[in-house]
Length: 334
Image (cartoon, rainbow, N blue to C red; front, side):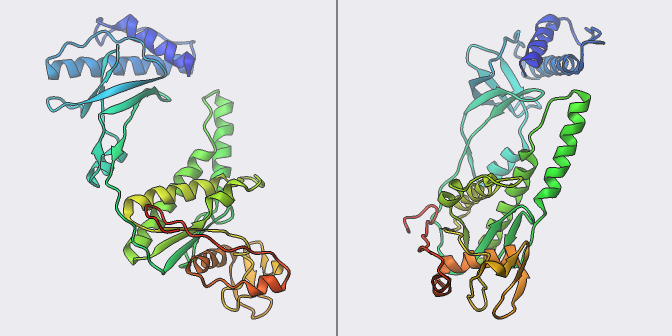
């Protein structure tokens, strides 16, 4: 990153004021130098075009630190949506990201102060949007969610998501190819987080349209889990935090439940036994109920939130249990 930034600003300083025809061969300097040269020309071209449209002289850019504060200025006389003014630095043209447009369309208020940082190939401005915090509507009808590796996200309404192993294997192959070509590395978690973000929004929207409350695994419990397997507990934590954030904006109440024995208890006869579950297959040893184990876990999370999860079978088997607790996002119910 530091090498790319050094190449970028070196080209910007060198070709400032020479016009778009200024060229220099970067052959043999490597992939980073090639990308920095292309980005520098695009940055200078955007600044010149913005200066022509606004009538303001495009000043000589100065070096921008890795992270600094900036101020957003709306621009109505050019093709750029905003200008970002950096303290003791240049004014840079900025285009609106799709996520920002969606947030403003939902009624958010844009804060003029932003953070400017260096991205992978360009400067990026991190902006903040304020929303009015609605009061959550508590419903005793819950939608339970269970997060794992085999199916990703499973819900109590029977929905079964994508296998996270497929995403992880695809990113592993991508990283291997990047290392072979000498490119920058990418994170394996990024693709999984994007998938979990979509699933969290989908679950919150289902609750919003059906008038239900959302039941998820307790964050306190997930934070104390020992990282095991190929993914650990961070996926469930990320999904739970994202659900809380989206539910707070959508006035959906969220209950956090202790997830112990939820995938071992039969939702039909309340019989709890470790042998009920074998992998993703659930078959009750008492009544013969057969279902997907993660869907059963999601159903039992919803039953715990509604107060219908049986304890006496676990106590009879000598398994310790504890009462679940309820945290409603945005409200004072506990």
